Amino acid sequence: MCGIVGIASGAEIGTVKSMLDVLRHRGPDDSGIHQDDCNALGHARLSIIDIGGGKQPMSDPGDRRRVVFNGEIYNYKDLRSEIGSAEFATHSDTEVLLHLSQSGSEPAKWVSRLDGMFAFAVVQGENLTLARDPLGIKPLYLGERNGALVFGSEIKAMLVASDEVAEFPPGHVYSPVAGLQRYYTLSESPGSVTDAGQAKRGLRERLEEAVRKRLIADVSVGVFLSGGLDSSLVSAIARRHKHPLDSFAIGTEDSEDLARAREVSAYLGTRHHERVYTLKEAIALLPEVIYYLESFDCALVRSAIPNFLVAKLAQEHVKVALSGEGADELFAGYDYLKSINQDSLQDELLHITRALHNTNLQRCDRMSMAHGLEVRVPFLDIELVDFAFRMTTQLKLRGSAQTEKWILRRVAEEILPADIVWRKKVKFATGSGLGDRLAQFAEQEISDTEFARERTIGDGKTLRSKEELLYYRIFREQYSGNNLLPLVGRSRSV
Image (cartoon, rainbow, N blue to C red; front, side, top):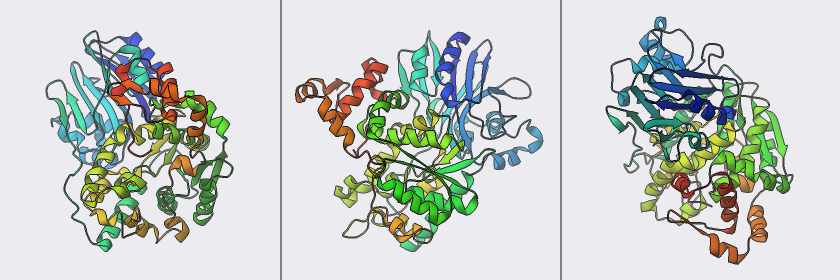
């Protein structure tokens, strides 16, 4: 995991250095800058694969092309074999991008062969290829400076160079000749997998493979473990492939997550670590969390606080952690989904999955990278995602009780205790002990008159609660101007 910045067709090395300085937290292990007559590129590196050989910006043997890359390509060894190992100077997944970019194929074709999470730029003179992974697990933003294209991993770095910032869309690739092209579309077809046995087998196989390949690294890998269904299932599968396995939990002293995580850790035999925090600490962390998060969305900020703390804990022991992110969107885990007509449920699940790039995935990326920790999300493996959307929604919300994530629970029955498998979905902020405590704090801090006066904020947005106004005030202190409001995703479930 890393941070990337660049200015194409208008190289300004000083500006790129300043942008890179803002992103040092994303890559504490190393950094590099390249400038030529056309481009300036910067890279802050968190070394995960090929520690010694993966330095960036990376160039091809002829020193014609260069790449800066953030993320992981999980099928890089297969791609290397197809290309021919003799062609490679390093063992890094980054170098695969350089070779594929020289294949003669259109960028959309070779980018679609990548299995992973990524945002990258490949340059050769005035030729530029920018790409982002299918669901937007890794961030990428665009701007303009003196007529030149600017790109970077976070909004805060972009503001060093450009007043206007736009998000590069997930599942797209850009080149000056072809422009912006979509290479991946999340399926809109109705569920064709209706048999529970077929769904269970297909899901188990895909999840097993998704976890297995996300354990590939030249550094230590652990798991976030809240004791909920999603993180426990990922941890159980990871434990089958890795020993010892470090697990990490966060919560207030009386939180349910800490107790449940201890239970799962003992059952699986992980090497467990936990951090207890207080409401006072959570409130004090708000400015730092919102600065890194780049959002004021109420649900995101609430969950970002324990996410920030568990990432800090994990970083003290490992460099990579696996998370259960994405399962609620794929398998109907949120309570509000139970009020949606079954005929409309598939559309809603598609919507919230497509929106992950600037909601929960943004939180996941920013809170982990604030501490130089890479987080991988097995549930958002593209083969698993596509299979999940081939399932009928009746396999997700099941029966008159509308049991959420029913098919996922059936998979978990084989490898987890029953009380964990059938534990009711609890949001991370609630399970870790925050619950409505921040809302109560905001109620004390903001009067009804203030809320009525300040809740309309421009760009057609209205703040939904005093708690969100509290977060918005902090956001505006750090990121002024309404031009950033279109970049702030809004959670459907609060």
